[in-house]
Image 1 (cartoon, one colour):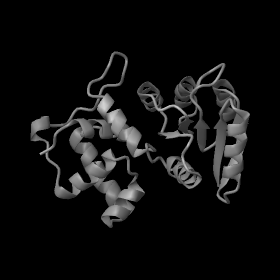
Image 2 (cartoon, one colour):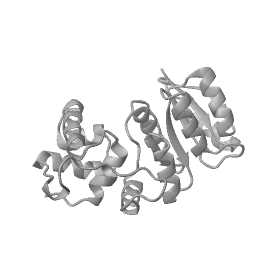
Image 3 (cartoon, one colour):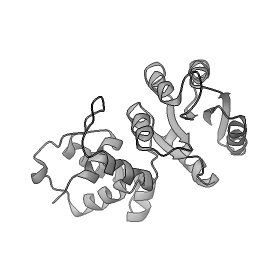
Length: 219
């Protein structure tokens, strides 16, 4: 059973999300919170698998809550769900430790799939946001996490044809399951290829890898 906590300052949104999730046999909403501070306290008590976290909330906003949970409850994954798609929100949420970023107008079926995928550790980033984020981060700004460095010179970095196919789909924001389906491979094989890609560019962080891959020119 996937145990979820919902944090949103809007009662209607909290109740709506709870109703949607509770209809699923494999998902249980164990608590709801009105702000980030309350969410952190409830996570400490209930230890949910996943938190659906709004960004703009009183007392403690979602970004600060994500940072706190990353330290206090690293086993709990956080999926940011918001109406805002500004670059800085995306950057701050992911840099702070969120496993993904979804807009609140996402269709119900995609929301449910995203919740399940995020709980397994998949990075959840819609392709439109992934492209926007990659374009935005051509260079690290002060206080921002630097992009990974390739183990060799960028000009010497080479991917196989299969790796390039996977790189292209990663940049589009596809998760491992989608890549496997599109390339007619098993998820295990996809993970092995992605591990090889990570090794070549020198990172184990999918978000930074996608940003870096989008920005570079591979040969």
